[in-house]
Length: 108
Image (cartoon, rainbow, N blue to C red; front, top):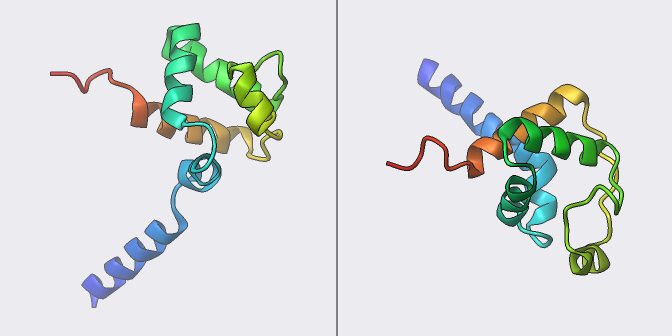
């Protein structure tokens, strides 16, 4: 009985996905690569703290001026709409995003 319950809970959790999967990945499947965006931010802002701050600032107030995307991307995809995520959920999504693409601690 416990195994059935745990299986059901895991299936429900997987089907709903995390805040990053639900709010970032679904839109970027056909748009700009999240991996490329990560490295573009890293090249421009250098540190985890500065990258995350810049991403939060952009997602809360997206403009051409504060975008790191090349003009060709903006022309093709436009500037994204302002996030509707709460500050907590936005930070959670960016933390997941950072962990997914960072190479820190993964190189042996």
